Amino acid sequence: MSNTIDLTLDGLSCGHCVKRVKESLEQRPDVEQAEVTLTEAHVTGSASAQALIDTVKQAGYGAELSHPKAKPLAESSIPSEALTAATPELPAAHDEDDSQQLLINGMSCASCVSRVQNALAAVPGVSQARVNLAERTALVMGSASAAELVQAVEKAGYGAEAIEDDLQRRERQQETALATMKRFSLAGDCRPAGRRAGDGLGHDRR
Image (cartoon, rainbow, N blue to C red; front, side, top):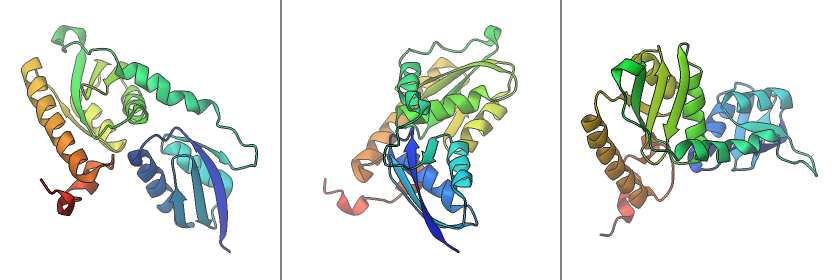
């Protein structure tokens, strides 16, 4: 028998985050429909509240059963911490320090930075991961291979490629920045790249 469960969400800060939570919930066979905003989810189906909460947490966000006086839990600190991590200028990678540098595609907010950083830190052999939102790069220390790091980022829902040298990094950053500006001018939101292709072309009146 279907019923609707209301959840209070935490850690979402853009349309990309909302889309990830909605897709994670609707992939469950016991969920018929999920309506998701930055702060709430209304889920219809036969799934239990705890199962839905676990699903949201597996997607990288906080959730709890809605109550009249419900307050966000400790996960609310994630965006500010991620923003701090996004601020420093990342140094160029050097062979001797066992580091890998990646160019990240699809990040649009501090919550995205946190997800990418956590995904990289969880890879076996990684001792430290630093993600820069402005530069759209990640510097990863440790023994993990570039292929393993790229795969981890892709599993988190973003794009990634290994950067071999500083010149290549700057060229690819410029390409990514131009593509991002074009996407935002057309779509006007922070949906992931896969949803933007062709979107909004009818509104470009330049």
